[in-house]
Every structure is written in C-alpha cells, then in structure tokens.
Image 1 (tube, rainbow over the protein chains, first blue to last red):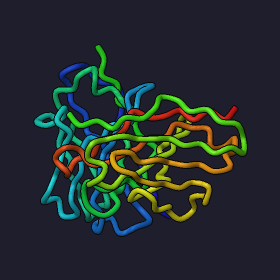
Image 2: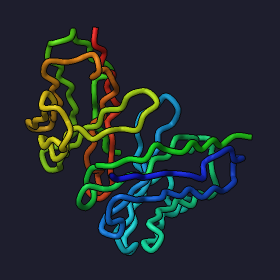
Image 3: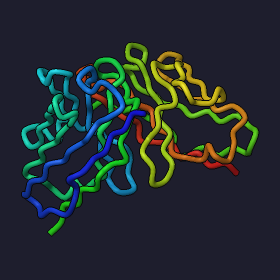
Image 4: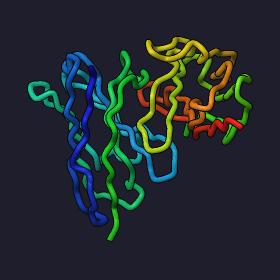
Amino acid sequence: EVQLVESGGGLVQPGGSLRLSCAASGFTFSSYWMSWVRQAPGKGLEWVANIKQDGSEKYYVDSVKGRFTISRDNAKNSLYLQMNSLRAEDTAVYYCATLLGVPPGGFDYWGQGTLVTVSS
Amino acid sequence: SYELTQPPSVSVSPGQTARITCSGDALPKQYAYWYQQKPGQAPVLVIYKDSERPSGIPERFSGSSSGTTVTLTISGVQAEDEADYYCQSADSSGLGVVFGGGTKLTVL
C-alpha cells in the first residue's frame, strides 16, 4: 500500500524558515517524480514544485521561486521542501504527492498533508 | 498567467447525471486530470489523461474532452459523491501545473 506521510509543519513568523518532510513507503520511491501541492485554508489547490527521480530537474510555481527548494533522498525514501522567507500567503496545508508519469502529469497518490501557518 | 475555469457550484439530485466543466485555451494540447476532495481529506485522482479512470474509481465517473473544454461526468450521482472537484492541466510553460478553481458538487 502506498503511503506518504508529511511532517514538519507548524507556526512560523513572517520571514522565517521551515523544512517539510515526506516519508514514502509501499512503492519504489526512486522511480517516481515527486511533487508538493498546497491548499490555503478554504481555498483551492496550488501546485508548488516537482522533482525528478534523481533530483536533476526541479520546477517551481513562480510565487515560490528563489524562496523554496525541493529535494529528495532516495536512500531514505524521503522528499523535502525547504521554505525560506515565508510570507502570510504561504499559509496552507502542504501535501506531497507522486507524479503520474512525467511533468506536467497528474498526481496519483497524496499524503494527508501538514499545516504551515505563517503569522506573527 | 494561464488559468483553468470551472463553475463554482453544481447541484443535482441523487440518481441524476452531474457534469462539471473546465475550460482553458491549452486543453486541446495538454491532458486534463480530475480530483475529488471531501472535507478534511486529501484529494483523490478520479480521471487522468482526459478520460482514463484509475483502478478503484467507480465506473460512474467519466471524462471527456472537446476543444478548449474538458468535462467530468458523474452518472447516477450518489450522496457520497458530494465533494469539491478540481481539474488540472499544464501551465503555460508545459512543465508546471495549474489547477482550476474547483467546483462544489451538492447532492440535493
């Protein structure tokens, strides 16, 4: 059974940093593109970033470029999102997801999400 | 920036057919995907590549494409289908992703 478990969310002040993690199991993690998708409270879904199987290609939504970094550790079956210079508008539930095929693709498996709140 | 447009809400009675549309200029050239999201839960992929249904998704869910519009059709709607539905496709670069604003399906 595919499982994706996010962690690392919490309350952070504007301008602060946070690192999200996603632990994957039940599939060959190193064979999949992986993604982060977020959802602000009461709002719709927003794609954040994708990373290729070996980490050699990464794509970001314009609003996080230069502030967020997606990475992965295939030996640990883990996906990460380093978030710097956080803003109030980054407040959201952050989901990790497997990408179906290659970008742009769709997202076939999702974690339950971790809440990030940016507030003073 | 490129956008996908969905109606904010659709209402149907149990047993009827619900159709949720998603419009975007690039849809003739890019695949569309559909997700169902119930309150407090993660999204679930219900249609991929315009019209393919993942394993485990009921046959009453189907997808179609015509020009700049893709449609999610739910035949014989059940109370459990009440949820938010999101379409998704490629952004203007062709490598990133864009979601529609979502459609709340209400089963009367």
